[in-house]
Length: 284
Image 1 (cartoon, rainbow, N blue to C red):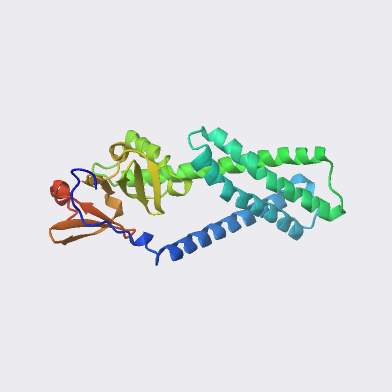
Image 2: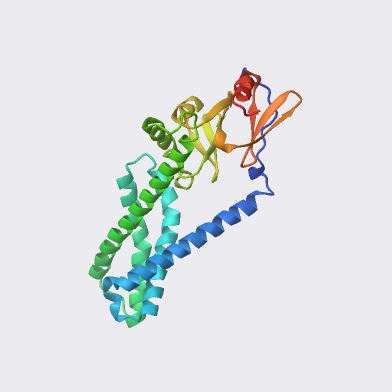
């Protein structure tokens, strides 16, 4: 416990309990696999209908299977590469560089897939010059699709932050508040950027960000996070916690202690210092 910190009841989080983790993880993976499969099928149908790469001579059903398989391969590769590039190796780089890196990497297995398909059809491997030509074309398509995915994530994040900011007292969110909230969202891994922010809690030099999509950790000071989240309706409830109104599920009192239960099941402590402000806000 840090010096001067209130002796609050231990904060528990039902989402992190051993009983709840497997089901949550399985559900998330199933949804991701289903979404990826549908996207691969949709892109496969579009590419087959357009007859990309001169595949119009192939029967339409085989064409759909051909392109759906390649799209599935690319989406699977992107699912592995995106977190590595966007969240770890190049998290502070410009988006154009991140997108270029992803496109260059995921195009490798897709090009290999093309080579295997071609070799299966005629029993021989194409010349290296053909490899590089196909790789170049695949990189262009991969970059376009990756850019589209990145743009959609940004748009969803902007919409989510605008909706959240509009719940704050005073009506519509200001441009500054939404921009600031988006800056905070950009610090999060892609899967969390369009999620509702429920709370942030300090753990040493890191923050645990509680969202509707789960939890994640970022390196940031709580004071800086509170400033960037100023456009959202919420308040500091403890020296180590800030809670958003949209994340509040219920309150609990007992033995002179007050806690706020989040929609995720996590419990945020309310220290004596902040109890009056929380009560005046109508949260108690």
